[in-house]
Length: 179
Length: 125
Image (cartoon, rainbow over all chains, first blue to last red; front, side, top):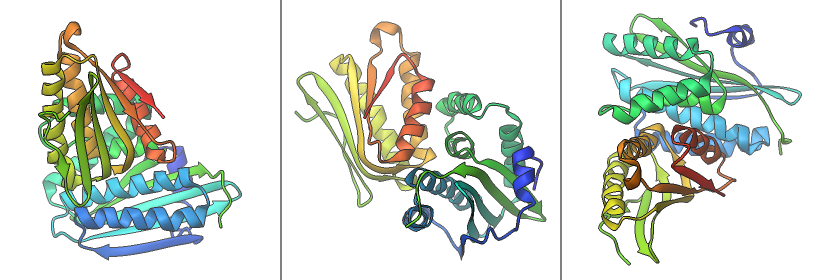
């Protein structure tokens, strides 16, 4: 993963599976299926985590990462893996997507995430992205910025050949008790 | 009273606009994902034109029954607000978002949108 700060480095050293509750889907996502997965994530994790607010963040990040996969996958195939590790009230959330992408999109992913994660203030940078977005005619340019600003998750990527792995990861406090 | 703003009527999303008692309002019900992006963009452009034609001081957007909005649809709102900011001050109108506290994404997204246009946006729960 690219260097995206201390929090991300610390979390990245943990067990790759995040064993408390994880699932993985490999499929050809489209807009309909992205919403289906988001609903499943919402219903599944609100029971596992017992916290609707944290679950909402996971759902938003999952939806935005999968939307990216739909838009930029070179072969239409994508994998999403979501894992949660609980340590007291703290939850480590990790959402990974993986898909093939063409060279232009690989370069774009690098540029977006590098810019995003080098901005010291996520909320202020999101405002910059919104001002840019208001004048854009293609794409929103907001999805990844939304993940960082609205879900408090860090973003990173790894590129191997023409395969891009994207990760949203954060350590969030859960208020509720799982059912 | 009906407006000149075309409704959205799909399996995933419905949006209807009304003009009653001098209040122009649009209510969204369902899910606003990538499938709805173009419809929402068209609706908001028409709503903006209608607000200017009717010379209203305020437009209400009711999101209380909107389950989710992705960033592509959110961008349509950003563009609308950007166009509103570009108008001369006397022509500008305010936007009131009605939200549901139980839909947690709404608080975070509307907070960001409010910061984008502090003087023009109010959020009600």
